[in-house]
Image (cartoon, rainbow, N blue to C red; front, side, top):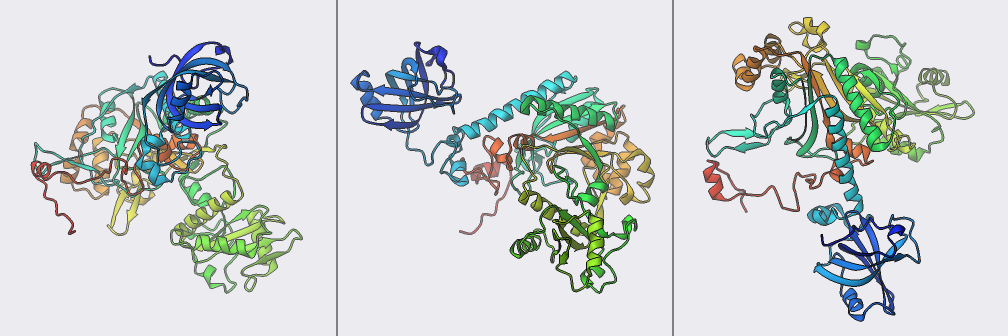
Length: 595
């Protein structure tokens, strides 16, 4: 080895030893008679000292020729540091340099390679190999590594077998768009990159591998945002001879194991709520339960019955009269919000991506008075009834939206999250974990005039709802479940269909002709005829889990070489055109844009 120790290894017990360190020059401080060099590698930073009173002149001169990010080997003696730095593990020692060898010089980097850098996202992604030298990025990838090891350790202890499945597979019409790969040997035909190993893991269950997992790369050609990448990683799992309860218990165990091993947290509880409950009280199938602020209906949609009396109709306020639902939240202690703050909230819900037409507010003053933006229509007694319904107390602020049921709930969900942010209720060091259960099996698409699988076409209906598969598909609940942490869906799965006749009926309800179903999934339905066991599984978004455990909003921070929001890798400049000769070999004609 060129080095005897790493730059994060030396401690006071090494004082007096002769050592050799290798690394990158992080910083040089030349004070005339004294020179200090911060030498960095993956493991940490060690300070090197050169003193003209005893360091040979050639060594001092060599040090003065160094620049940031030069790769060097430094030999010397470990001594006690005069001015100690308690912020780093090596802060009590330094190296008296006796020899410096430049292993490779370096150009001046385009941004500071420090935790607090001056480089923006674009420049750091272009030079990602330099960005990866920063401690904050390195620690993210170290966390990812520990997460992967902890996952494998737990699943191995539960008798899961890690099996690799193909990357070149068949394109399917359901779900997100596939990335396709042309075949040279079968001209005009294409592979697809897997959106998930779904059918293969089901085939493994047919094969008798009753507990499978894989930490697997998946691909989706979809619009991107902070928690999406065209290629991403899943913890993919499947089990045979189980019920939904077995899946929930097993992977709640994995979740607890990760929290304990990675964060040192004993997870207190994992709540379970239904999809209908989540939508009614939070307007989202992935609610953030780190804080309450439940929805309260002042006018309920008919489809949920009229279990609560209507407190807003008959007052000539047409906005509420025409609405399917009037629903609000109570923001504790916010009655003193200024008009400017209330206008900001109104502008927030009116943003195009949220789409509300306005916001009604009621201040419940500390003196017990009630003032609202609809005082013209509602008396203080009316507003008092609202407050009682919403559990508001003096000092609170009530915020109310109305309109079509689904839209109003989704809009109020965004407002609830915004209030959670403003009030500091979404603490990244606090975790709320829950299962969401009993999703609808199918959802109707008005544009295509047909049913779509809410999860995927292999999800089994609840056994008690099988009767509706032919008569009332919209009433069927799926034997499906999502794991949600802090308002982020980190995993989802279902009990699968394992009977060919039921699977054929599902394809029929999804608008597949028998020929289309046979062409796309005939191999799976045929496999079901050879003794398919009852089975189910789940897939976790590994990148999302890492970002949650690392306290980041973006999964890109935990991927070594991510794409940008346009799906480009600006470092290697891809996607990019390919040579005409390759296109000809693949029998692909490309119409190039006019220059």
